[in-house]
Image (cartoon, rainbow, N blue to C red; front, side, top):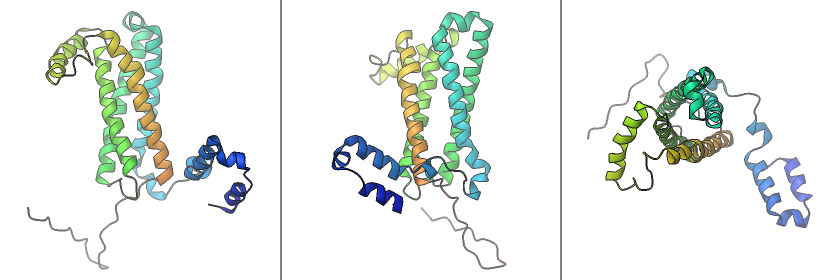
Length: 229
């Protein structure tokens, strides 16, 4: 804690110390100082291409939300019969394709970098769970297309879900239920996880690349032998 933060804490009144809003404000400032929440610079290793896909995932997610919101407001007849609706529907589809592709590359890149190092386990968990929630969101999106493709997917998925006993609660043949899952519940879950993930990245910092093995000057790095099973 800096000297300014110590002085600010010392100047608090008794009511401010007991107030839950004051506690939340102080905790937020300690966990997310403005210079860390909105930094002006990043370490040099962030210039690597593997670090780009996290931001690319967020950018695609924003396009998904905007185009999906337009589709939800105008309704199925608009995206089936209007030229503009066809365009927005295609924009939504391809932004989802890019969102999932960028997320997979980001996920595998951080997996091979062991991104849970340095007390970043929760950061890794929120990213992995948001990927799983995104799969469910994409699945319900296929179910509400109202075409032969969505009907075939729904009838095939119905048997699989019924076999594990969840078909009574998650009815893929119910268009209204799948629509609400797709435009309300699952996007809220994904959005919450993405925001939590980004805040944790800002709190813990961007993970450093794995260190190279130490070698003597003038010699090639030695690849460790695999352990026998």
